[in-house]
Amino acid sequence: MLKIYGEEISGNCLKAKYVADLQGHSYEWVNMDILHGASRTPEFLAKNPQGQVPILELADGRVIAQSNAIMRYLAYGSGLIPDDLYLEAKMDEWLFWEQYSHEPYIAVNRFQMKYLGKTADQLEPWRVERGNAALDLMERELEGRDWLVKGARFSLADIALLAYTQFAHEGGFSLDTRPNVAAWVKRCHTRLGIS
Ligand SMILES: N[C@@H](CCC(=O)N[C@@H](CS)C(=O)NCC(=O)O)C(=O)O
Image 1 (tube, helix red, strand yellow):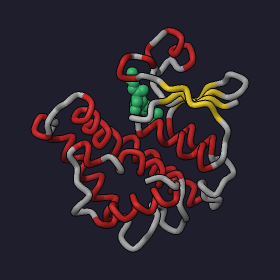
Image 2: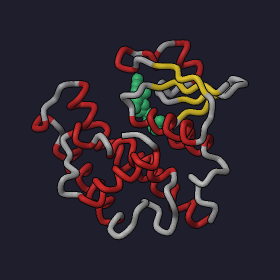
Image 3: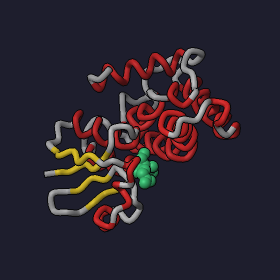
């Protein structure tokens, strides 16, 4: 059976859970107390030398790290990955963008406020600025369309970006002035059957 090692406070781990659930995979969820070093033990480092969750462990013991790689594995051959090569590459654009230009600002600020107890004025201003720029870009891109990949249906791009955008308020960001993003978050929740 598949095993997902993760922690539900982590949007990166939720990506793996959302896709596994949507695809109807049977899997065991192995809960990892990452706030207390569970991903840094010698046993876990033997599975993933990167020392981070999520990881997906296949039935034969092989391991895949990195949330977006895990999503791609779990969604292989499904409608969550566009079957048109150009659209698939556009989906990948969003996955890479999420890891470099969204998650390091939205997720990190959320972590600092929600789990380290910082207040909004203790956040690094450049990180706040870049997080706002990421949300503004999404707001513009979602104008007049339902899903992030233009010309495609709901895809892994939406799940990857939902992961932390849905918690942006916990990092001091607001969706009140970003109606396209707020409506898209609701659409994603409906599509995933979560609230
Ligand atoms: N790029 C990685 C990031 C993984 C990551 O940052 N994991 C965090 C939780 S969101 C973690 O394991 N933190 C615990 C640690 O670093 O010790 C991915 O997308 O999977």
